[in-house]
Image (tube, rainbow, N blue to C red; front, side):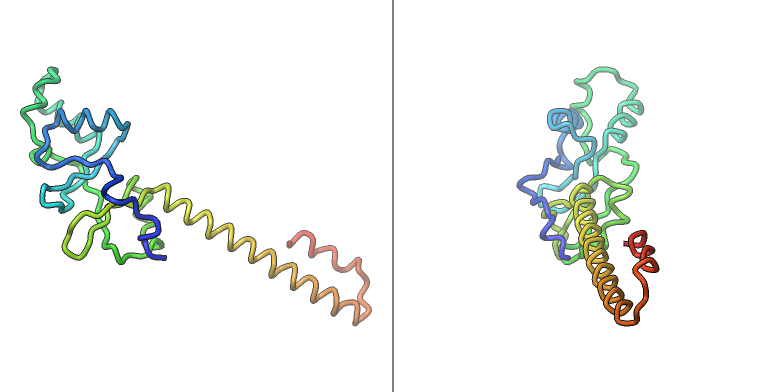
Length: 171
């Protein structure tokens, strides 16, 4: 299934610009209670991911305890451990399952590299759950249909009902 059905559009995503100060980023992440946010350029392209861990390591590297010192650091100049790898808008949601195990959101870009939104881990888990539930329901229906067919066949062959007890355990 195409990821457009699960896309949280850019207008609904909390992100920081690469030229924001570290203080602006911290305040935005704290206010919205996010542990990671996308970084985009003023031109709208995806530039990476900023995490709480990246911020803590930068503060440690600066060796400053004054919160106002964070005004002197731009997000783009920070070292980051890793960036969430973006996917193209034409990607299928099934392709994101393994990626979602290691990151809480997946950035989505268009063919020009423009950031258009994210797919959250929650959306991917919801998709997998619904698909699994549908498969189990279909399997039960198939099993019940098979059991009914066998009951009819066994009755026509005069096989006693006692021999069919195993079906209850299988279905």
